Amino acid sequence: MKNTALTHIHENLGAKMLPFAGYNMPITYEGVNAEHEAVRNHVGVFDVSHMGEFLLSGPNALALIQKVTSNDAANLTVGKAQYSCLPNNDGGIVDDLIIYKMKEEEYLLVVNASNIEKDWNWISSFNDLGVNMQNLSDEYALLAIQGPKAVEAMQSLSSIDLGAINYYHFKVGDFAGFENVIISATGYTGSGGFEIYCKNEDAEAIWNKVFEAGATYGIKPIGLAARDTLRLEMGFCLYGNDINDTTSPLEAGLGWITKFTKEFTNSEALKKQKEEGVTKKLVAFEMKERAVPRHDYVIVDANGNEIGIVTSGTMSPSLNIGIGLGYVNVKNSEVDTPIFIRIRKNDVPAKVVKLPFYKK
Image 1: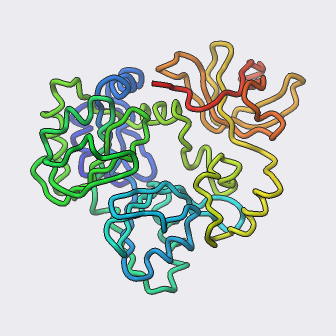
Image 2 (image 1 turned 120 degrees about the vertical axis):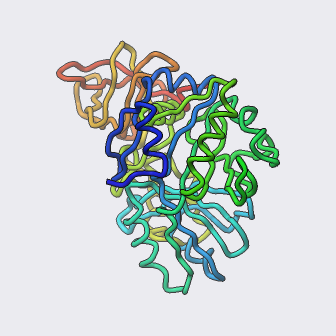
């Protein structure tokens, strides 16, 4: 099992450590609800160094990215990032990812930890264009500093105006005494803040300075369990739960990152699916009674007929109700449709709602 550059710090802080995507990762420190609340109201720091980073460069870098991703990366300018996915040949998704345009002819692709090898092999298999590909995953650490106080708490650590970095934009510059740090506003929590990409050897010093700077702002270390409740309250998809090799981006509500202005892997089949309409859709739902929906629970209609399956579910710390995402057949996908979640042998009432669950 791999460690990040900060694993020893998490252990010293008494974090509950568990294997995640082949890494020894902090799941909680003092408890999910307290950590969740810290991010919603103050500032929290996640070690997400298990994520993968690929650097693609050369005259044909954009052409390769256009071939393997669903979004239109030609729209990127230097300093902008884009959410996208890697479609497979069977209508499903290899992975979702973020693409950063670092320079002209140079792009950083950030992929999910569990899919690093799979994604590398997949993209490489299309690289007949001589694109220089580097897998930097084992060289970089990634800190997500999230929450409404993040910018204010961290501004003393950089000469860059952190508040001026718009959502899905980034800057490269000085942070906590180190140069060439990527500071990116592509957070996964819905509470603002940014991410810091740095070399592994600099990570501990940066972590320590971040906590010194944030001390008066109530800064806390946050584990992956709260990361999950935070992203679910926003309705952000998690690969392996809500999207996978068998779910299409159109079924998952990711039509907005599926651009038919270009050709890409399986684009013809996805275009046909768009024209003909999908048969199932990913929906958000709230429980009408106190109950917690869980991954793989069956969704039924009022007559007890199976109509879908839960992909993500939790007790929302912000709303104090059970919330979830799941696939249902299209006729049960409209907002306010009553549905039922089969929990043990009981069909517990819920209703389809509009995202996000959490509204600031």
